[in-house]
Amino acid sequence: MNPTFFWILLVFLSVDTAALIVLLFNKIRKEWRRKKIRHFGDRAEMAVSNYIEKEFPGAVLLNNVFLKTKEHFTQIDHILLCKWGVYVIETKSHNGHISSEKREWVQFYNDKVIRFHSPVLQNANHCKALEYVLQKNRSLRGIPVKGVVVFTSRKVTFSKPHYGVIRLFELGPFIKSGGKTTRRRGAVTADPRGFYLTKNKILALEKAIRKGSAKSMRRKREHERRVRRIDGGSAI
Image (tube, rainbow, N blue to C red):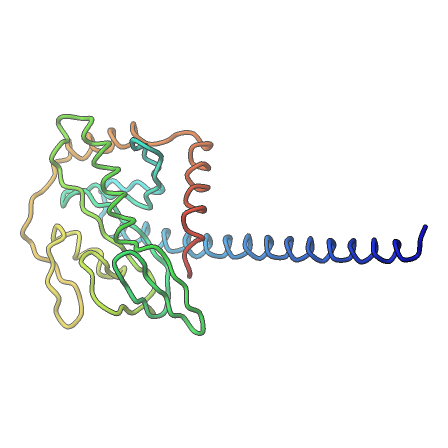
């Protein structure tokens, strides 16, 4: 073999090997970050579930619900059915300071600056998905579906207030007020005015939601892949 050709081949192989190592490293790092985000997200959702079970004994709480819409499946963290109404709850585990714009929010945490899709808009789409499912049942049409975004960390601050964006300890008063709240010294307090759902209506809502939810793990994985393409994930 020609020595020159041998060295050229060796250089190309070395470059290809280095490129492959970099690609594998980036893939492993992304997967590790995804698992870390999922871990904090799971802990946050568990905190919300535990809070609701203690604060609203006897209410119907549906967790990690996949609903079929006209175009695709959408995943909802929590759906709470109680006498105070129907609530679609989006859970966030972010720390630090959150700067919120209409479509894009930014998290400033230590030396990190991470952008993520507006959870308000995200949850508005979840509410529409649930309304779409309930519209199929004539007796359930017209029941208001209310959205709320819950940040579980006490170490989170916001650049400006948004209706329906609260911290975990404010969730009980917010729901018991039917989404109508007053703030005193920075805390949400309940406004007792509002309408109430009967037990039979709650059971009918639960049945309709379960009927409209995805049972197939394949469908759920398809949704997760679609979300991953849209958004690289949320920050902790």
